[in-house]
Length: 78
Image 1 (cartoon, one colour):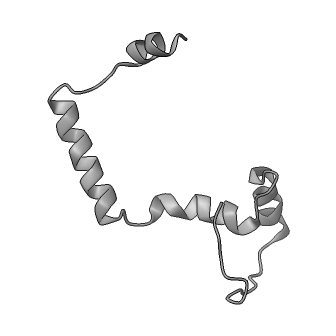
Image 2 (image 1 turned 90 degrees about the horizontal axis):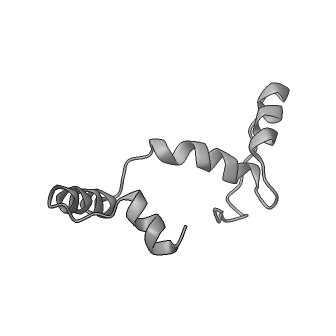
Image 3 (image 1 turned 90 degrees about the vertical axis):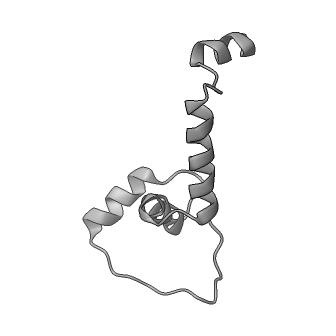
């Protein structure tokens, strides 16, 4: 869930069709802002830290430092 400053709000006009579509994604406790952020965030540029983490993960994968899904299930007793 996202936090935002109530003093920095604005209103936007959307069609009834879009509102009805947004309602389909709304879960208990979600605001419409939460839903919109969920759609927007994947399109925002990754942070420098996220880029470093991805590169580190790639290196670990190339070294074979990984756990298969089957191994994880066995470890968790699933």
